[in-house]
Amino acid sequence: MPMTTDLLNNIEERLREAGLRPTRQRLALAGLLFGRGHRHLTAEQLHREAREAGLSVSLATIYNTLNQFTEAGLLRQVVTNGNYTFYDTNTAEHYHFYVEDSDRLIDIPADQIDLSALPSLPRGKRVKGVDIIIRLADEG
Image 1 (cartoon, helix red, strand yellow):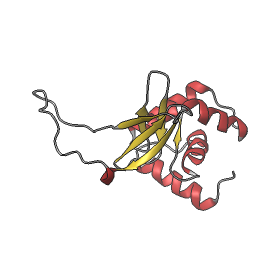
Image 2 (image 1 turned 90 degrees about the vertical axis):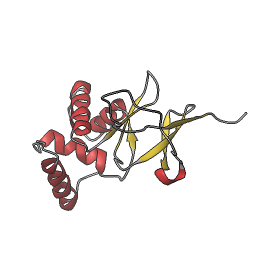
Image 3 (image 1 turned 180 degrees about the horizontal axis):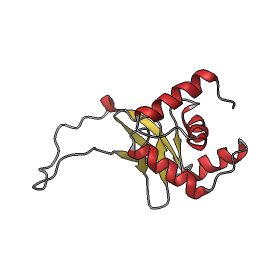
Image 4 (image 1 turned 90 degrees about the horizontal axis):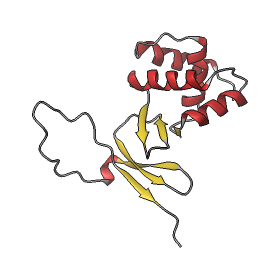
């Protein structure tokens, strides 16, 4: 999907605001990530999309870029198990269903889960975030 000028300008501005230099490679990968609304992708899925779009980029570069975007607050990392780490373009507070049979995530709005109390925190620690993943399997 070719990037429009508006999308390119928006992505370039988001990268700059996050403290990242908008290199050609970052712009291209950000276009793939953010050009289709909120989504959940693994590094391997993004690598496949990049190759299909004609980008010559290594899987290591994909991982580095995803980690940079995550550290800059542009993505949220969701670890579902030892085999799958997803990168979520929706950084607003929300939770997830994980469909094990198809290895995919579905968003759960934050207001649909009631967190009335958290356990006491260890001394010197603060809550950085709360991740809730509800694992699903097909019936039958």
